[in-house]
Amino acid sequence: MIEKLTFLDCSEDQNTHSAGIIITDPRGVPRDVYHTSGVTPTPLQEILYGSSLETYVAIDCLALPLLKNLRDEPLILVRSQKLLHVRARVKIKTLLVTSGSPPCPHKRVEGSLGREFFVSPHYQFVEDLEGWSDLTLDLDPFEVFERISLFLSKAGQTV
Amino acid sequence: MTSILNSLLKKFLPCSVPRTFLTSSSVRIAAAETFVVETALGAATNKREVCQFQTLTGYHIHPFIIDILPVSPMKKSLLLVRHGGVRIHQKKLIKDKKFQGELIQKPKIFIHNLHSTKPGRFGRLYPILYPHFNRRFDNAAALPDGCTLPVFQIEGVMFLIERNSALLAHEMGSGKSIITIIAVRFLLQKARIGDVLIIAPRNLLHDWQTKLCKWASELNVTTITGDGQARKKLWKMKSHVYLTNYEIITQDATDVRQFDLIVYDEIQRTKNHRTRTHRASAILNAERKWGLSGTPLENSLSELVAVFSILKPGLLQKRRNDQAIKKVTEAIKPYVLRRPKTETMPDLPPIRSRVIWLRLTDGQREVYAEIEKQGIEHLNELGTAIKRGHVLALITRLKLICNLHPATFESCKFNYIIEKVNTIPRRNKILIFSQYPRKVLLELQRRLQQFPHTSALFYGSMPDREKIQIID
Image (cartoon, rainbow over all chains, first blue to last red; front, side, top):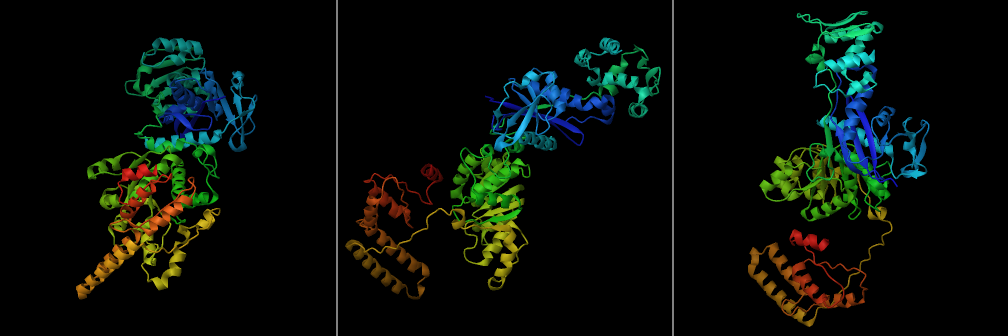
């Protein structure tokens, strides 16, 4: 029985990147929330970091410092392939959530109101998928990611 | 190549620069210094990037013997990278402020306590983090345990959230406040509003508090009460919902800041445009204004005009009643939603009214006749000085006698009620109304103590604390 779910997401708004984590109960009700301030790479930084900029900002600058603050090691759910790579840097089970055409291997999960979704592990950590067979969750993970996204966008305007 | 670079950079990097990236196999995503080198190495294959690099940094990069040289008048050579080998002339490249500034800075981390009574600067955004309503407003996580919204309430929520000016005029008891709370939560979740001011009659504030606690437990609610000084502080507190009454608004209206939404509960309280309540309510500023009322039109059309001059200024002009009804109805149609109880609660049995005529007891009849005689004599004595108030005062005295003998407390009504109470099973509830609660109901309550039914007395002039205790 999963007691806690950790949703990690990052957002980009006008070249400002930020990330947030919502730890929820199985119904999606938030227990803890963490988020970062915005990081805005300069044009020079964009050249210096090249194509690796997005991953570097998402993983090294945003996700890892956020995950360092977690009190325990819950399961992490992400919705972007880019963030799934955080698994290579932390010892926390991490799964990618998709609504269709999931990468292999994957497991099908029934969400709230019968809406199904899929979870896939990082290719180096397929064992993260253990315990996800025939699971039903009373929430829509994409709705939770949307909450993080909206919160980050509004928090960016507040700072 | 990368390992040579790493070892040399490790040697010359100042301590202030984090070194962890140097041990990483992926130098490419490590830090800006490394990228300077890598960009330089890759310069020959990406001319556009080299040009951009030179323009932005002022450093030249030679395509084969790759030099990074400052264009400054000092002409200091900072880093020389040779094809197939690396040689660092000076440590200055890394120390150079220009380069250090190009490292992407680590962001600040914010940790939120969602249940804090004093939410910080992000507190206004907390409702966004709670489960959002779906299109059918039926996701259990967003509603209190075991609660659902009937169709007419969902219709009411949709009606409110789609309008900046609205009058929700469902009949009393159909859950207008719950509809409003859900609509407020929806707008807060979507960050379409940041705060809301709810103005309600004083005796309904506790009801609002209870409902907000149940239906919107994630929201921070501030009730504005107390003296002027205390209220000033309360108005400044950070909150999602501010709750106050019309009396306070008449005092504080000019000092109240702008809100994203104002809800006027029992908005008919503002129906007379000459009153302070109306004027104070009208000067409040908000992008959205919603009114709630079970009886939006009590006497004349001017009341509706007054109400809409608050909700949507300029929509209605002052018109003569007889000519304007049709025009006013047309104009307000998009802003009013009214559902009668027959639609909102079709399962409720119809109200049955029975008027029962009782004969006064001998004692009541005697004292009634005496007071009536004295009263008429008094009115005759007053002659032309007689006023309506004199007559009403006499009627009131006579009505009281009909309820209760002033000395012996005999009462034909009490006798009837007691007889009826005896026949009603204990599990049922009985409501007894009187115009004179303190004089009549107190005595009735005393007499009802002999029965197993427990009783509670509630009247308008009762202190708020007592009212809350009784309701709870």
